[in-house]
Length: 398
Image (cartoon, rainbow, N blue to C red; front, side, top):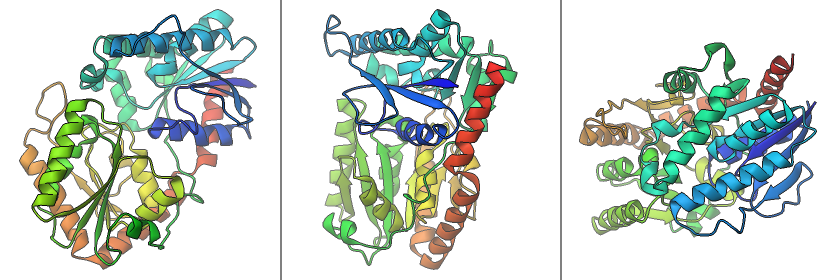
């Protein structure tokens, strides 16, 4: 079986959970099927990559709506290169239309993995402008026509069927994300922590994610005002969706520092071994997302032995076991289109309470981290996930 795997992100150009997913999935799928990766960006020195693509020069400009059209030019080029595959599998709206066009052109099945859903991310209109309508069109067209839709959590499956009621529920399967438990493992060394100007002997609270409203970083910074004074906060956060939200975070971090809080901010993506060491030293890893279809970063933190404090949204409750591997914080939505908390002050206070419970009871934090590692080993390994994905392929090929 020859499978064309379509993705915007692929190493070394990875900036989010979807890119991490495709990287590891491709490696493990190659043990089951003949995989060829088609990705955006520059050339890759990787035997699994068949070809990488740049937008057409004829579509010039950097505005958000033009950027969306440049994405479509890559999708057309991808589709043109897929003659001869038995099945196409696309990830995220950036590549969904390429998979859909290839499916129609070559009359082969199309499988879509949903890492998030565009209708549930209205804040992207701030980032993409009119391009947001384009992204929603690409996603809807591909999902409604796909032979199978892989949802990364039960919560995501419910969201797919809610957003796209035309989709037959029998076509939506759940296959979780995973993590490489050899790469993501406890690392007690502290040189990275010390290089970042932090005290390895004091409690460490860690956030890893994009600077996006979806990731709830503003609520974390509100919560940090209430953290135990002994706690240090490390933000591994870059790529702001808009200049405005980037400026908001700058101001909030400055205010925390002025108030005597110890906050370190890493704006570039840390090399994986360094990130693993950071996670391995976390007293608490915090995921305050207001929308998270799965939440792979929580699995990575747990694999490294960190206790997790996360919002009870999307697929996160399928990862974090309340009171065993960490704490889940209830988030009652306000009802606005952005899914913001109805009571943001209460939400931030609840995050702070859970974090402080771990900071003030290090033994409990260690026990939760150990339980989290055991859960990841049992439930979220890549070999099992690749086999489940290959089984989906075989089911649509008949």
